[in-house]
Amino acid sequence: MISNKTVLLCVLACCFSPSALAGIYKCVSPEGKASYSQTPCPDSAIEGNTQAHQLWRTLRGLVVEGKVFSTSLKGDVESIQQCQAASAAYVARVDLLAKDAQAVALHHPHLYRAFELLHECGRCRFAALSYCEKADVELNDAMNTLH
Image 1 (cartoon, rainbow, N blue to C red):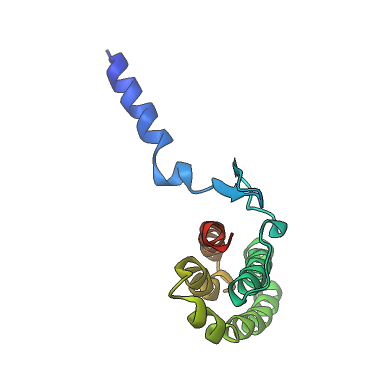
Image 2: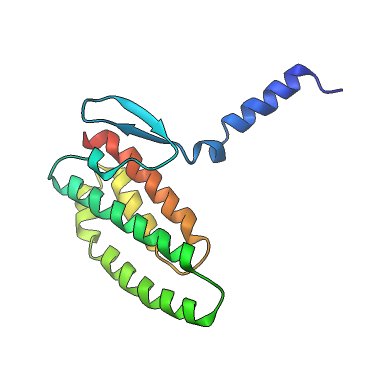
């Protein structure tokens, strides 16, 4: 017979496991009010024109674009070839951001980690989506330092 204590421990373990928390985003409004959601914070949540703000917006767009690769990838040769061509262009655009990412890395490490994750996010493989989602989390964490 399972005790109530065992059931409670199992429930708590599930609630606080990394996989349970992976899809929760903390968004902070311009007024400083925090809200939590299962979807990424909107781009409009980041106001400002600093190098970090502009990089954040660019990286967010690349996350969205990278997610398209993993969702459109099929097992046929034609879709793989199309994905590889698009992926090469995507990674080249990510690489162009290296100087900006390095410039903000010290004060905005979440932005730099998101930049690094985007290299794998735009690859033609089914695991790429997990890198896109990790980059999304890093960008949402970066929001706290950009306000």
